[in-house]
Amino acid sequence: MSENGKRTIVIDPVTRIEGHSKITLHLNEQGRVEDARFHVTQFRGFEKFCEGRPFSEMPALMARTCGICPVSHLIASSKACDALLAVRIPPTAEKLRRIFGLAQVLQSHALSFFYLSSPDFLLGLDSDPATRNLIGLAQVKPEIARSGIRLRQFGQQIIERLGGKRIHPAWMVPGGVSAPLSVADRDAILAGIPEVLAIAESTLEWFKGSMEKFREEIASFGNFPTLFLGMVKDDGGLTFYDGKIRVIDAAGNTVENGLDPAAYNDYIGEKVEPWSYLKSTYYKPRGYPDGIYRVGPLARLNLADRCGTPLADQELAEFHELQRTAVLSSFHYHHARLIEILYCVERMQQLLDDPDILNKHVRAFARPNCLEGVGVAEAPRGTLIHHYKIDEQGLIRWVNLIIATGHNGLAMNRSILQVAKHFVRGDRLKEGMLNRVEAVIRAYDPCLSCSTHADGHMMLQVQVVAADGEVVEELRR
Image 1 (cartoon, rainbow, N blue to C red):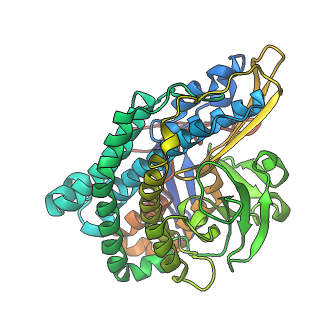
Image 2 (cartoon, rainbow, N blue to C red):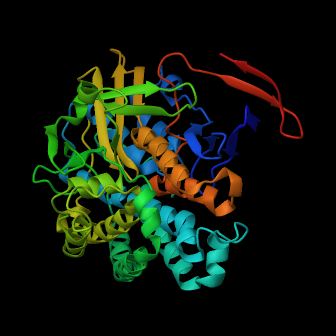
């Protein structure tokens, strides 16, 4: 599209991500990018249609928020319901929940790295888009394609062994889990760990050795100062299940430490822009949009002092050496994802080797003792918040979800602008330029299906488009 010598380039849809979105690049008369927008075009209203349901149904309902990371929603929802019950779940139940969550992170990271992003690394960002996918990768690098499939399979098999099925399991419940771990399932999981640990190690070595080829992308893929936010253990260690919120700045200095996750409203603000259904968040003390921050693998490794497992601790030390400050380039989300895969495998083995993991006491029973509960966990893509209010009968009256991808909304928009300004030239446009704009979104691995909702009045835009692509009529609300 063009107007007064200016042009708009539309990338629709953005490919190799979970969910539906488009990107618009606005060029000036000289063909240089002036502005860019990441539009999330789908809308789902989970917060509203849960109202009136018994709170005990929430974990199973919330697992259906997303087919990619149902376990993460199951964990956050179950923790919110634990808060409503005001119970302390049995120690074995907590360990089993942790294993469940680690398996989710493992399979999701494998999907992101191998299925969605590795074709760019191995086939080239300028390669033929018809073959720049997992099928094309399997033809050129079959061993790497098999590795990715095996890692994801292993994570999914653990979810199935614990939860009964791989997609939308309902095994986690208010007060714990619904069934203990069997000896056979524990032994089967442990038997697969050496193989997947070797895959994780070899993939990390290959990726670290290939990063020199992507110096230009590293320099321009979301490489700017922001805050970083996420949960850490009391000792500053990496965690996915429980902890306190830490915030650091781009220099690596601690801005806040030990924040109560349940008090998120004190320091996290939410805003919806008219051009997207993605609800973006910001750090309240710095306002909008200056309070931009990032979450997810890159943020977690910037925030963590240690992982707590031998191999991942060694990799984390190397990761921290990439920059004297916090590691800023969003290209390094891929590197961080691989380190977290390694950690997940090691940590699951530690938990499964605990004799108490077979304890049959895995659930605490109670009636609601509080009318409000917040559950927070680290999903594969970052900090996930579920906040529920119930009435005296235990029926849901209000829900707020802050999805991991939403935290990165501001950063994703700024990233596509940076990449587009660096690579895109309107007078000599090439497909590889636009692929790089998409690739920076893939670095964040957004999961848009569960992150789209509006805060207050929902903007609506309807277009009637002719066969030749011309917009013949447009309505806005």
